[in-house]
Image (tube, rainbow, N blue to C red; front, side):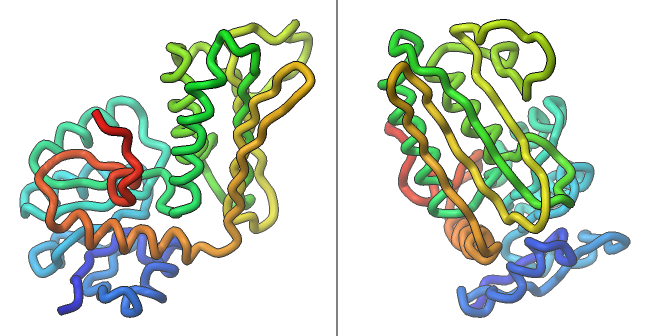
Length: 248
């Protein structure tokens, strides 16, 4: 039987990509939601909620999903810390997969970055930089994927947000030992490029993923929707969906 989906952000690029391949993945977008639509009208008849809308819409949608006991898949990015904390709190009532990127390849990039970061720590004398590029219409920066890559490096080095340099301009001086560079490029119709660079003395390691079709993200989101349906309440990542999470 087809998985019934309430899709918030149905008119956007990701929403359209999900709708175009849903049937091929045993799913059906039974209630598409866009600006001006009320998700409450279709929440009761769906199996799972997928959100690829605007950051302002995610929290009210999460509350509505929890009220009706519907699991969620969230791909929207750009939330502030207060919104993130409240959405995480709601996940104690429903199963929720929240990811900045649903591509299998990108999640492998997360895994490889974590492994590399364990070896190339502060004592290794390698300087980490994260570079991402997206299409000219993307509103938030850095991307959710870049944010996750930065988190991985910060965690491995015991660093915080203050150690991240978002671009550089003027006489910034020599690069501090504990700095992590972050650079967001925008232009054209680029679907999504991400590179993690570890620059050492005499050598450089680069891990890169380039996306050329949004359907890879759509397929991942649908995979997550089917996976989350049978999970206990809690906050999950795409790493969990793919079985790449490190054992606790």
